[in-house]
Image (cartoon, rainbow, N blue to C red):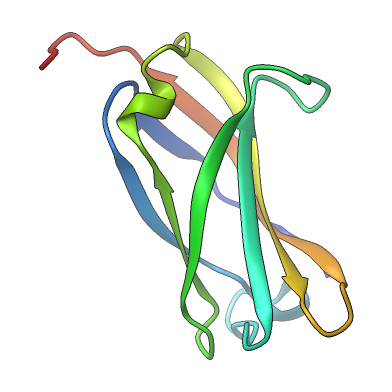
Length: 116
């Protein structure tokens, strides 16, 4: 199953919340039914980096429509440097343990000016 590319922008120190859709077998119109799946996502400086990784909270909010909610807390990005990172979202079918990447892209972290 081919993944879809979707670039995102995250303001450092703020909460980022967005939904992504998992599409069936590389389709751009037919959603993957995520009943019986779990999701996971990370943001890293590069594909080869073992550090600078940010865990992304993932929630499958509509299984039949393939909708996955992504949430990155502002405290998770507060110490990150501005710039381009990579991210992906993978799903695992719980009965077979089959894992596939459904979304990937560039996560641009932008600097903040205001603080609380």
